Image (cartoon, rainbow, N blue to C red; front, top):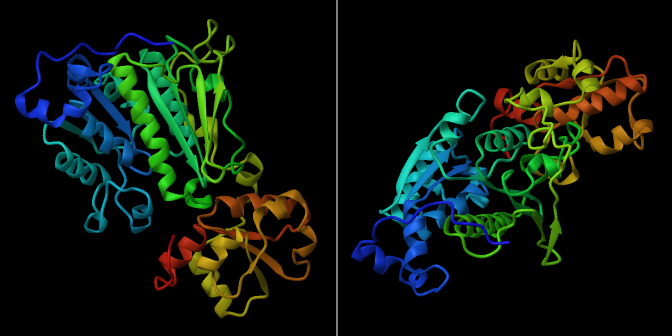
Length: 392
């Protein structure tokens, strides 16, 4: 179903702009009118990371007149495998500034607006209100639900994308025309159930595949051409090289866009999504040590069993000396409970402390009352004890 264009056309294109966008102008469906609409459009990209990188670059190349960047993070070396808008010389630089510089190099006719801040309940309405369309490149559930709810409450459409390892998804959520994100996912997954890209990894080029779909949908919405993904979910499997289009219907019981909505204002999204389960939050009370405390225990020869609860591929990258590997999933499922120590004190660690908290809860439930976990995980060990080890 085609929809009316989101924006009115600009008054004109300059001679230089006609030359730059000539390959668009000779497409009958875009032509001069469509390109003028792109020039007049204001699009906000939430995030300048894996999805935001290709999205921002192609929005700029397409001639979107005003591009906003909402990003608070800085460029890290581990970003460069997939976040192609940044380069080696940008390491340590705010991502918003690095992305803006790349956009200006791609297209000097684009007006770039930097929002170098954490997007939260206090500023999301003010920031979203400046734009016609939102492109969501976030990688955590709390922000995704906040983006959705803010867009619904403001009546704005947004293009959503998600990536993990070899799989990607994309859709257009617009409560005025179809379903919203909560119609598809009414509740977030249980804490710890879905690993982040930092925990599970992502094939770098997958970002380009999904990011380019997002920009394609943005162009269609802005210019009023084609059949946008409103009411459809595109699922991409890079290993099988397959695309599936799944129908998504508006949920009449949706908490935010349904006729009897219960979410009529922004909520506490960290609490709604949670970072760890209630059991894990309770388990870590009085059972958490720092990396420096662990170092002291090791030097003192304390009788401990140091257990790494990450995945084998992560264990191969870096580990705390003297540890052994038992993945969290095997502990939580009960499959590896027999491998846990009964004579020694169990000390669990993961990458940053979330998975080890979940493992700790399962171990305590199984009777290991004196077990502890390491706050900050292996990254804490690297930062506090041995900075010569590689990070990821």
